[in-house]
Image (cartoon, rainbow, N blue to C red; front, top):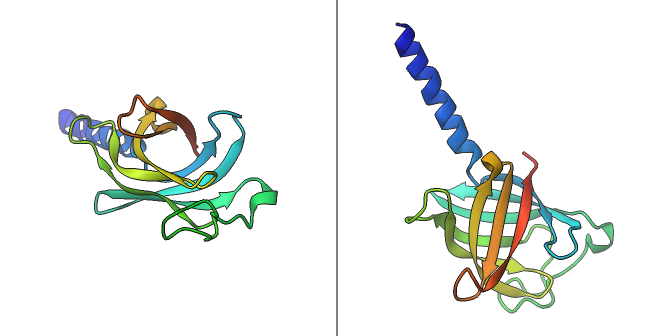
Length: 146
């Protein structure tokens, strides 16, 4: 009986650890160059496909910002509430990575391929935007809020 309870507890703990490593949740974005906190972004999962929406811009001066440099359907739309991460799925090569989608940088309007990697047990996430191959890009570290 004790071994059955121990197995159940271990299974529960393992499931919690996996859930914490998921990119799903609310994240504080940090500018990779200035190290300034920029926004709160909510990553959600719809049938294994991840996307992210900007919930709040932390600079009050940018609260009404629009994506005037965007070249797709997001052009001239408000940055607040904008979907910046689309079509990301768990990597078939690495269970700790999510990739295959794209991410928008509303500051310059450019869309990049993206790779997400939760680190520190899911407390932080490395978000790498790149062109072509992951070596040709830059990484931001987002901090989990919830």
